[in-house]
Amino acid sequence: MVLRIPKLFKLLQKQGKNGNHANAHNNSNNEKEKEEKKEERKEEHKEEKKEERKEEKKEEKKEEHKEIAAPPWVARGEFAPVPKKIKFLFVSIEALIGDMALIVKNEGHDVRYSISDKDSKDICDGFLEKSDDWKKDAAEWADVIVFDDINFGQQADALRKQGKIVIGGSAYADKLEDNREFGQDELAAAGITVLPHWDFEDFDSAVKFIEQNPARYVMKPSGEAQNEKELLFIAQEEDSKDLLNVLAHYKKNWAKKIKKFQIQKYAAGVEVAVGAFFNGRDFVYPINVNFEHKKMFPGELGPSTGEMGTSCFWSATNMLFKETLAKMRDKLAASGYAGYIDINCIANARGIYPLEFTSRFGYPTLSLFAEGVTAPWGEFFYRLGRGETPELKTKKGFQVCVVIAVPPFPFDDPGTFKKYSEDAVILFKKDSLEGVHLGDVKLVEDDWRVAGNVGYALVVTGSGGTMDEARKQVYSRVKNVMIPNMFYRTDIGTRWYHDSDKLQMWGYLY
Image (cartoon, rainbow, N blue to C red; front, top):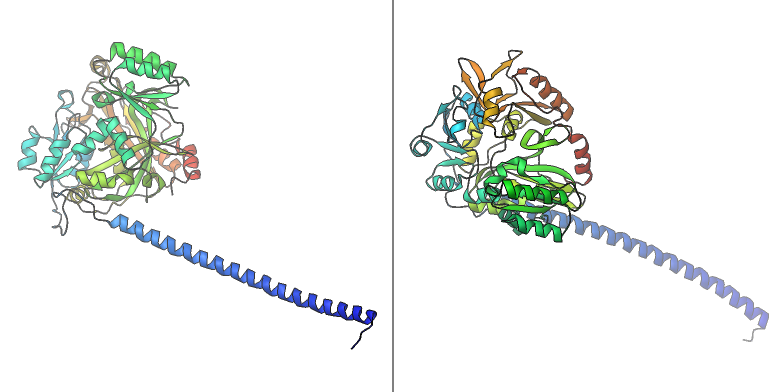
């Protein structure tokens, strides 16, 4: 058949239109298929992520329940019932734990208290029975031995091997706190980020290092000298010229006492500590997050005191714990340590940097715990020391403690103590001792009197659903106390108002 050109053109146009409709239809189908495939892939991806999260959670649970390689003396298996009356021996050098010893005694247990420092021996007289030979009492009398400080580690390990229930102390845990270099190395070995630091045994080498590497540093004594809290120095100048002056002074006046010290790179941020009880194999929850107030005067002014007060709350595990203390579990288990352990940290947007261990009870933190823990302490210590995972019941909300001191605290000055504070009477406006905890106190003819020679008189605690409520309660209790020349900080707990915002923004409290 022959077609004329116009007819052919019209036919081609018609066919083109039909073809375009077909192509459009096909394209539409293709687009739908592509979208469907995309949705399928998204769903598959979601499912894969869900499965991955499930597997991660399974691994976390496995890790939590993994059997730790603890020493053979750490108990396992079935436990005998807890005795109603337990014999507790509290062992101390400087009489730090009298308050907790009295709490355990008031729960109905038998308590003896050993103090080795001669200037502290009258502390808790009239409140507690004293032990003249703690080693004999540990071997022949005590069911539970509680060490309140480091430097008892070897004795604690030996007693555990003999089958004794021991709280506090192990050679390994002592070294974590006493030897700053070792503590930082162990943190790094556990996969924890640490700040750059350098250890020195002479002042000239440290001065030369700072001069050649100007930056802002912190000087921290190691060993026994670290107990002199006023010796720690944080440079205020960016090149640490002020620290160079301090080192020159220390070389002249403190060289015999400061045998070793650490220069650590300064990091700005929130100072916060995280701690937990450990039963020889694993941590006991909840954990504790606390904020120390170390300077003598409000606003963090004046000399370092150790602590003038602390605020805290109890928490489920969070990022702060997981990135620091949790990673030390295997190392602590290998040493058989049972007791409380704490890491003080600097946290900022870049990360969490551990500064130092407190591998023992903290003071006044232990009195603060007495405010927040509702479980009986005697039974808790007994179960913890024999390797159980006792239930640690705690209050919700916040707790705050305030140290009430008298001269010469925080300095060592026996003459000033004798003149202003020796045997000073402690009185109470109202007949209530709620939230009042013993410091260096003795009972003489029904009068509370300041004892020892340091001036660390009392710790007063309070709690509440909010930090504001806890502060109101603790300071209302502080106002009930009367001691000649007493002093205390009025701002304990206020750091929370700005520090908490930062920590939550960085995700460390979740």
